[in-house]
Image (cartoon, rainbow, N blue to C red):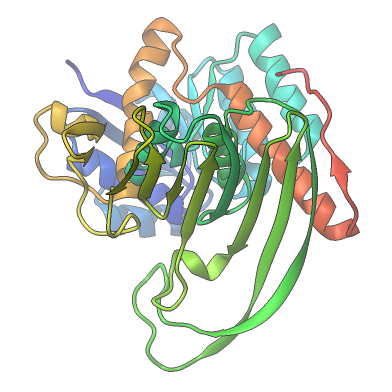
Length: 356
């Protein structure tokens, strides 16, 4: 099958994920060009990746991309996504889809009234470790899940995982919480280890989600958790029959006897990709690239984003959504509510939106 041909609009850190994925799986993807704002950025990207980088949208259009990845800064994502979608291109936009409620509503109007083809690159439900956790919940080991405590990902990513783990969909909710400021020694970063003892003040956010149906989520996050050797990440999901606690499953079987399985020891390992995640003989996750004969795995982030990119073929050819636009818009809407709750110090309530 011919590789999917695509371009990336943007030259930031997120853009480089797509370059690594395309280079690892050339039979699946061809990254034709980066579109950068300035000549200097284009030269830097081309030198760093070995992939063509240009400043002219017309040059990108001449590449006849099958789809366009929008990986610009958050404030510009909506406008750039709108621009390329209205040109007729399928768009995979980075998160969040927009920063303002009116813009989220406009994206839905573009889809329903203009026929725009837009998908959101919300990858964490396909992050291998989280995919396995969601699968455990969906298979009923916990019974009906009613509580999530998550301290692993930020904002809209957290909203996405909370909704999937609890099965609340677009159910309305109340949110309230607070920010705290704490000092912590820096030990790691996007660009490598830090060993000079520097200390930074970091915000820790704690929010409570109370859903209309009675389910609850506790969100707890500090941005340093993504890159730190002294701050861990956690997940706990509870239902009447059991609990998934940091990828250890404890539950009561049909014979009313207690069982325990450790699914993974290091769910946030950033090394090479995973081929499979199993619970005993039961398969919870299989890397889709291994199924295509690709034995050299990528880290979990790249694997998750690459899985979304694989799904773009069905989206383009059959209209089957990778991560439904309605879900991506809901995640971004929840982010807005989270900011409102933290800024006001008051309880805020969601309202049913047009995409629901």
